[in-house]
Length: 142
Image 1 (cartoon, rainbow, N blue to C red):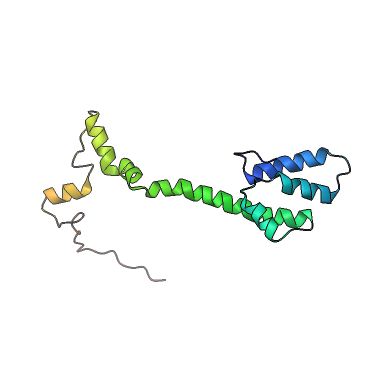
Image 2: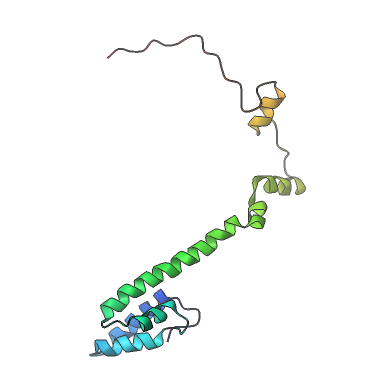
């Protein structure tokens, strides 16, 4: 039986290890045992009820697709926490600076912030001033 918190991949790995220990296991019995051991709310069991498999290789091919979907969805859930506005604010640069100032950390200097440095020295609004080049090196002929 597939455990309550056991992934499909873990269940199939465990099932294969156990089935190798059974001497002269009929493939049809293994197929039925694997089907009956799946969680009732599994999307794979729903698919197998709609379109039954006739051999273990077909079942494993289909199961592989469902395992990839499950793992992809799990990865998306972890990734979506980055898009959560509260998480984003907690990890933003400005929030980190506020935390550092509250802890009594060092204040940022003009050297640390290029855009603030350029504003205080009368350069254009963004970035440092564009240098003027009057002397150029000759190009080499090939």
